[in-house]
Length: 486
Image (cartoon, rainbow, N blue to C red; front, side, top):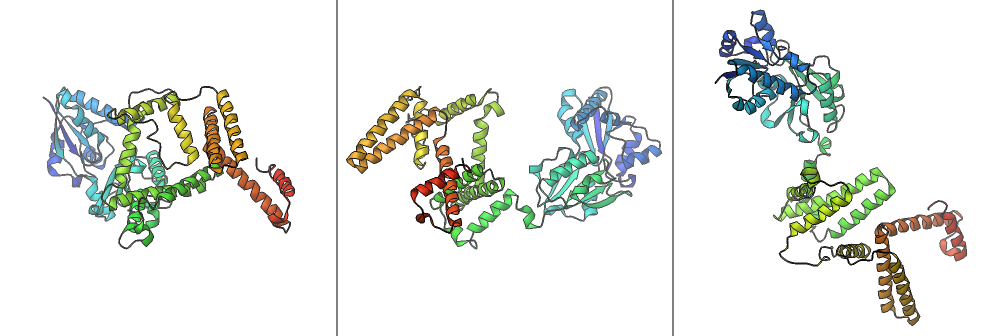
């Protein structure tokens, strides 16, 4: 079995390389390097060292992952013929994807790996930046930087910022979480005689001339509290503080039951913002709904029953489980198939231990109009439904007649019941025509409100009050309002 000896060239000059690694390289006839663009190799080349680099592979592929795979394939092919040494910048186990790929594929090729060590650039980076990683330090790959994985309260060291293109991607990703002028540090060839430390505002990150395979970007921890207001962890801390011993008396005394009405109010305000098509208002109202969720979760945590993590896990698990056409092998060609699959999965989750009514799952606290819609929809799923509008219109006429009879008798209790029957039939008609009765009535309410307020302002402009005008005059102004609010 042949062996690939793996070593790191360090982060700086030749004089920083351990003597044992230097001697190994000097006597190695089959030396391969990931890239020849490294200070140590420049010096060794002057000493007459011969090596093979994989620089040519970088020009053959558009994606770095493809480059690394190609390098590993060539290394393993060479190792089948003879043992060799593979040298990488820095330390083999710090920001070196080819090493991970070698570990993954070498056993299947009957190739042994032997790691000889190397000096990481991180020690030199800590010294150059004068930071202590014990405070919290995150090291991430600039070629695969993900916005939501960044811990802004920690030191951030972004490696493999090879060129302006990668620097631009890093900049755009960071600007989604940080101000455009947030100061970052560009550190190149740290620990060597060519070390460069450049401090720039974030928006200038990709405009710096010195960017190469020895470049890393350092993002200092965010200390200003206002810059963390977008972070979920900060919101959770705020809610916990409000509910804590030294928090707000009002927040501390709230319970799940006492907050019920606020959740309903905030939900309707979200609907209002949607109807207004006002994004800024919608952001505010969605925040108020989120506040209610966070308060309920904090109450659950305070009482030792559940936390916001349980809430997030439950909904994430449910979304993945109920979307097998996205996260699994199931196929859904349209929204109707998605809904059919959803309902079937809900049935399977609930099991068949106890047969329950179709209507048991409808929340008892729904507004009456919405509850009527849900009751009819559930009943319709098992065939208890009209398949034509004609009998519904006939039923409406019947209910109107019965209501008028009770009006003549002046029986208010029966009038109330008959009025409920009329509304129930109207909901059925709305459902048949695929209209949302709640949305329809809400729209009419808003229209009435705007028209009425228009009349009020018009009357006030005349120096009068509403009660001063006759109904005919008010009706005339009502007709005028229709031109503005349809």
